[in-house]
Length: 239
Image 1 (cartoon, rainbow, N blue to C red):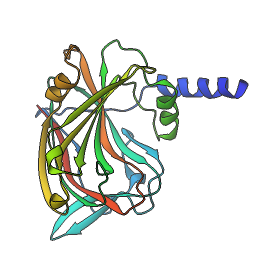
Image 2 (cartoon, rainbow, N blue to C red):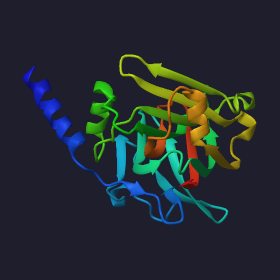
Image 3 (cartoon, rainbow, N blue to C red):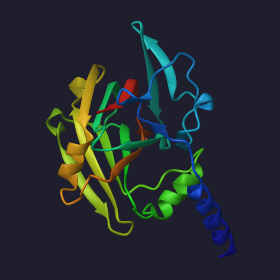
């Protein structure tokens, strides 16, 4: 019991402290992720968070046909690279990126984009799992009320599908959106743009978005028994 109390106190301290956040620029946009030669998680700014233990070779900058990208490999354990963000959802709803998916898909490809959302005045709704995840990251995760996961599906027919749910025990909503799919579309580069506010409206029609903020954006990689990877060009948030 004493050990859990100490852990709770430590986690509360992590969550309660102020941590750096990436804000929207004067042009109304924010580059979340940009591939750079010699990329290393050890040189990331303080507004980045790493959850889990990525493979030693991932993420890494790779060059192919003269184009630089950031490769995320799936392995035996899940991990995520996320950036703390402070942006109003309705003011900057457009998320755009370039990606290429490779290897095994399953129902959804293991390499995905994740967006965390919080309401003004909301309470900590992460539950014990969220707090333990905060403890695993280089900086504490922000409190969030809902998350949107954007993925690549096993079939092209899944494109545009949206599955929203609420974890009743934690009162935390999760929406899963398939932006593209199909094994025939693997190994090809795709430019994508999604309106996060529209996805939020479809997933949770009863929630007023005027006070909703985007609090983190990143890439999450699920564990995979078969070889799979995803490559990303620039990921950008804009109005």
